[in-house]
Figure 1 (spheres, rainbow, N blue to C red):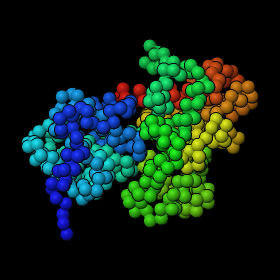
Figure 2 (figure 1 turned 30 degrees about the vertical axis):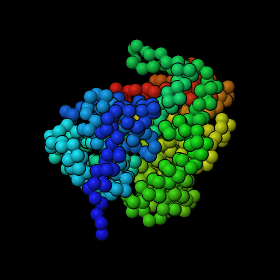
Figure 3 (figure 1 turned 90 degrees about the vertical axis):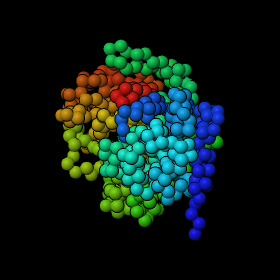
Figure 4 (figure 1 turned 135 degrees about the vertical axis):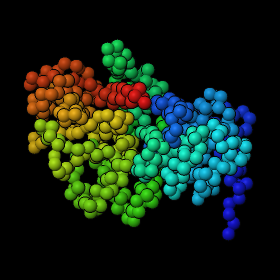
Length: 479
């Protein structure tokens, strides 16, 4: 049997790294694509060679990991790093199957006579396709202290697990979630047209106002339908066929290939049925019993599948508390949210402003902005006579700090009796000192009094925007 020749491997490396030729700056892909707001902190981490670790960039499929890597390569070249000191390869390429990272690195060094202590930048894209990748990468970090290694992967569940287990002190995890609504508006260059931002000197944050709430709502619905994926934002063909793009190229690859191969799942259709049930019920309360009945999957199996789907960045579970903000010892019920609301549109069709799914999808979009924060503990409250959608508990004493009720409607502003449950919850939890926020479709009002409680009304699209903008800004300031 013939072994893949070294010359073929080197030829492929040359093909994958066109900047090795003259005119390097013009040969880096995706320069016409805007940069994610994460780029600056990602690039700073790459350029800081004082920290002797590999960077593991992980996140769901099609959120821009590879594009951000190419933007980093362009940045390195512009920072006067020699183009021939930069290696990129995707381990999804069949030619590299079964090859060790060290062997590939050796061919790169030989090609340009790089010495062992040369300052090199090496990017391994889709590293999860290499068996025992974490062992290979850890060895390279230890053996080549002058090299900066960056790995990316979409199978986030296994990446995170193995990065933690085998890469202690060797790897730095960098998570790239889907686009925020603020990033989406920036990508289509409408943020300045639709949002007015004023920096608050006393809090180092921004206050936002919708310049045109009706037009902002139009873009919000487009965001729900396809806006979490950068490629869909820029491609009319993808927008017109999101079912093919998102379902086949993103969801199905995770459900049918990534998760089964990583966890040895034999009944793929069983996993698919469960995910379809969860996607249809995004933003709603579910239980293991009801999920088992709806999907036909055993409860013990559902528990495992939920862990896999959450680790793969497809869903997020939120725990329930009672009207006194107390957690349950046995979590029988919980809410499930898609991490990207666009996945529901791909499975069940796009929505408009009057669709029945607008309520739960608005809630899903708001929760998706919180993926960009690792600091906030969110719950929902439910009791016999009422429910509150979002409750933030203080990490130290588990007392509620602020509360949000998500609506895609202006009706509660006039029909105040719809706020009875909210007022009851606020009355039972005096640690909440902020006005309770009620999202609306178009209404803004900072001072609504009802049953001794102060409510603040704010359009859901505007609230989603400011969440994504402020959370991401503060998260990047901490890096």
